[in-house]
Amino acid sequence: MEKTMERMEQKQGRENTVPLEPICTFTNVVMYPLNPRKEDFRISDIAHALSLMTRANGHFLHFYSVAQHCLNCSYEAEARGYSRRMQLALLLHDASEAYLSDVTRPVKAGMPRYREIEAHLSEVLFDAFGIFHFEKEEKKMLREIDDDMMYYEFEHLHISGGFRKEYHLKQKHPLEFRDMAEVEDEYIKRFQALTINNKGG
Image 1: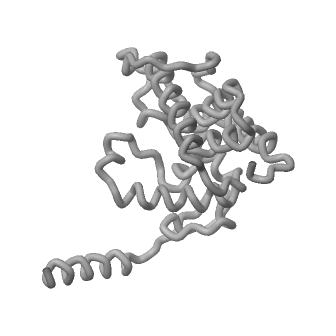
Image 2: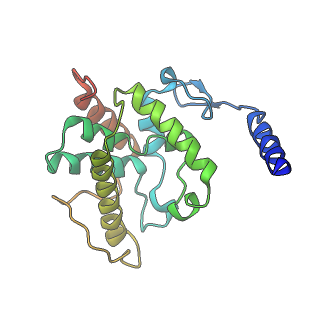
C-alpha cells in the first residue's frame, strides 16, 4: 500500500512539473492552454481558427469547417425554441478546439488527460463569455443537437452515407463548401447578435 501511494505521489509530481508552453493566437494573444485565463479568449481568434478547421478530420467529400458546424448547431437551438443562452452555448460548444485542435471521438475516449484539459479550458472559456453553469437538462439538450448535427453531416457529406442513425432536426442546414472568411464573419456576427445585453441567461 505504501509503495502504491509513493508511486502515485511521484506520478503526480511529474505531472505538476510539466513545463507550460504558450501558443500565439491569430490576434497575437500569448495564452497557455493548460492554464487559461478569461482575458485570453477573443471571439475573433475562435471564429478565425474554427473557420479554417475541418470537421471529421478531413474525411468528408469537401471542406466543411468546425465553425459551420457550430453555426448550424446554434441555429438549430433557435429553431427548437431554446434560449439565447443555449444558442450561444451551441455556437461556442467546440470553441476549445481553437486552442487544443479537434480530436475525433474514438481517440478522445482513450485520452482522459486531454478530456480533463478540454473540460477545464471550456469552463474558463464559457465563464469568459457569460455562461457560468450548465444544468443537467441543458447538457442533455446541447449533446442532442451536437449528435443530431453530426449524424446529419455524415449522412450528406461522407461517402458511406454516414452512421444511418435516426436524428431529429427542426430544419435543414447548409452543408455546402463556403468561403472561410465569410464563415468567420458570420460566426462573429452571430456571436454579437446573441450577446447584446447578454447577462448570461
